[in-house]
Image (cartoon, rainbow, N blue to C red; front, side):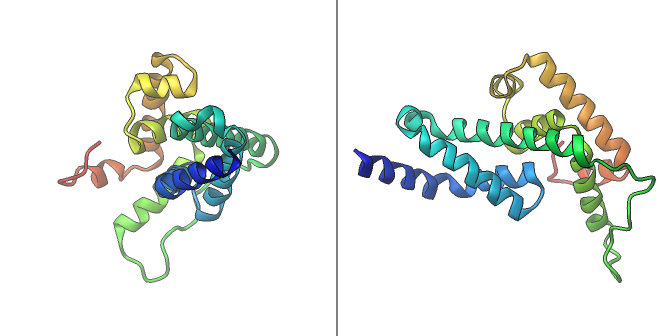
Length: 173
């Protein structure tokens, strides 16, 4: 029985690990934090594997979202330091406007409240519907819609050139 559990879990991680790491990266904002977040989520999933094996991916994603939101809340209570101006983001000699916008967008995403960042990740990275996002986060569809609207509005305020970046052919909003 233990060998079956180990084999099934290993197969799941091999097949879905890369996709789960992308979600973790979108939530965490950097590779190392994403790997830690995913490792912790997989450890929790392994402990419950016999009960979740048929529906494991949504379960692991829920762990990722909840753990990351909890982490944001803990850090926000301890270490949030407002600054008057965003530091210079472009590398020396880099005249790429698109690179600057992407870096500014990354900073703006990090500045969003945890719930808004989770909603944007689920809606636009995971391409989930409002209803699916609400079910995953344990809230109403109206909450998802309002959080999404507020998050996008705030991103547009924080990153004025964002509309220019997304108005290119082949880029959807």
